[in-house]
Length: 171
Image 1 (cartoon, rainbow, N blue to C red):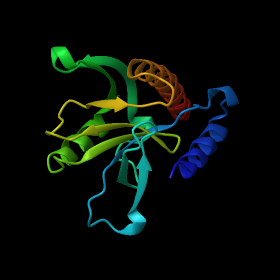
Image 2 (image 1 turned 90 degrees about the horizontal axis):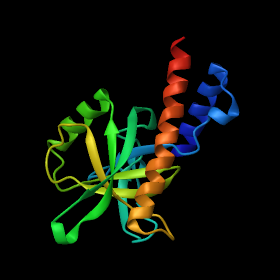
Image 3 (image 1 turned 30 degrees about the vertical axis):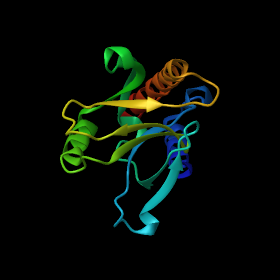
């Protein structure tokens, strides 16, 4: 899954003439939970690192890394049950794809994957029309708040590097 994306990203970087320090360390993509009727070659199982929740996702991401604009830690929930989430902001193309997909996918999940490791999950409980996804994230050895802050910081750095690569390709 990500090995192919790494190869494509590395090829793009070499063609664009970027320095090796401009290569993003984290490649994040948003995958969708596979339906039971999906073929075996079209799906794979991923597991969250702390809760060990296993989810079967399609092998092709709905939102590739280059379509993630940025992330931001947010606090949400009932006043006595508030917790930190990772808000992932999508570009216009992916926002439309997510809107179209979520119209029929209530009850499934989005999974945030970084470098072949599932780090976040988001239930789809309604159609998403604004291009903002809110993930519960996990990272071994870190609290919920620390995991959100760490992942947000690292993904924002990678998103910036990917935007620079895209801009260099346009020139």
